[in-house]
Structure formats: structure tokens, C-alpha cells
Length: 184
Image (cartoon, rainbow, N blue to C red; front, side, top):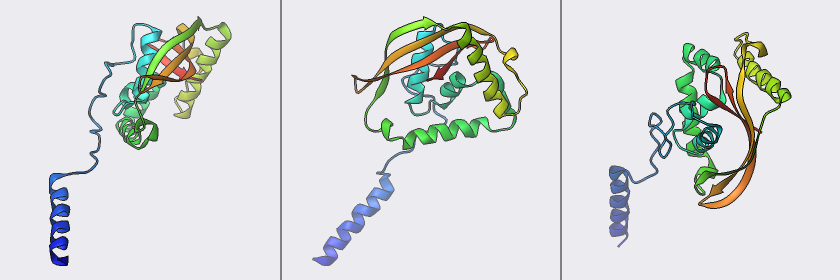
């Protein structure tokens, strides 16, 4: 009887290995599913904020996420140093490890309040992006950035279709690069 049980266990183990029963890794090169993002050039701040949020809670959303979070100069510098693809792949790989992506489906909810940013906030946005570029030694200053439309936005998000929480972010257009999102 022991030999029979051992043989059955061995057969089950072998069939598991051969049929690939196990957790599959996400294809790191695959475009994010459920997102219709092609770039950060959304038509309005609502779409930009929603797209950025959903990319941050999606597998394979790295390219979309980076396009909203960093200025083009930052991304171009990463590409010129052959760091961009690895950073996107690492972001995508990390998404597989996030417990909040496995305990439910998070989605952008609704905008509860929005207001145009003030001049003080515009200056802070310029300093923020200049600081990001300074991290890479690009030598850009706040004067290298112009801020077009800009909104301070409060929004909700859902988990499994039920309201889960709220957050605040700035959605701004810088230079001619489309919308960027600065989380609170």
C-alpha cells in the first residue's frame, strides 16, 4: 500500500511539473489590461488622474505610471542610460508582489472636489519637477518648467466595487508634455 501511495504522489508531482500548474508570472512586456493608455496626454485632468491611479494598481502599468509621474527629460535620460526598460520591468515585477493587488480590485472612484492650483502651488510644481531632474543631474531649474492647466483634486477609490477610501493629488500640464500627477 505504501508503494501505491508513493507512486500516486510521484505521478501527481510529475503531472504538476509537466502541466505547469502553478502561479504564472505576468508578461512584463505586455501592455496593461483594462487600461486604454497610450501616453500621458489625456484630454483632461479627470482622465489623467484615473489613468495614473489605475496604472499604479495594474499589472504591466509601468510605462503609463512613469509617463505620468516624471517629466520627459527624466525619462529620456533613463532611456539614454539604458535604465528605463529595466525600471519599467522592475515596477511591473513589483506589482506582482504587492499584497493590495491580490486582495481585491482597486479602481479610481469619483472626483469629490477640484480647484485650480494657486500661483504658490505652480511654483511648488516647478520646484518639484526640477528636483526630480536634479536627482539625475540634468541641471534643470524651475525656470525650465512652465505649468499650464493645474488642479488640486480630491477623489475616491474603490475596492471590489465598494468605496474604499479617498486621496488628494495635483494634476498639472507641464511644458508641452501633457498631464503629470503629483500624489499627496
